[in-house]
Amino acid sequence: MRQAKQSGFTLWELLVTLLVAGVLLSIGVPNFREFQRNGASGRISGPAPNHATYGSFATFSDPDGNSWLLQEVTSRLPGRGVSSFDVATLRDLLRETEEHHGQYEPTAPKHHWSEWYARYMVARAQGKTSEEAFKSAKL
Image 1 (cartoon, rainbow, N blue to C red):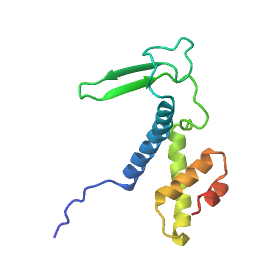
Image 2 (cartoon, rainbow, N blue to C red):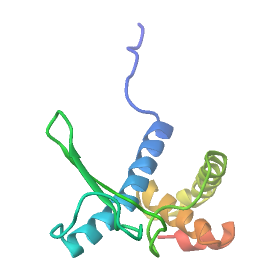
Image 3 (cartoon, rainbow, N blue to C red):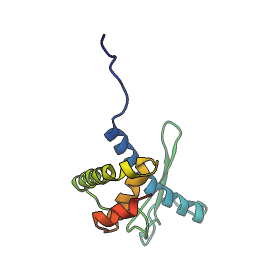
């Protein structure tokens, strides 16, 4: 008897997808909040005279009816954006996180791995050592 080939996502594919979604949300949500706070009234499409960050706007609609707003960002405001990880650095951090989570999980209370990974990776991005990040990530 042969087993049917299973389909679905591997853990790495899911992890990368969640990571990309997290990065997009970390950029999009603060910018959307700023847009809501300032409102859209009084904005003129085109470059701002002084090219101030978040000051230049352009809007357009695509053939599917979606409306798009582009902003010029010359410098990120505090707490916005993501770190400057390159692929190799992020890969190494993910592997390190996986290793430490593997040590933590057998003794940990019931939890979802993504919560632990996020806490660990944020602590490392803030400059904590792997041991400090391990302690910070405990739920």
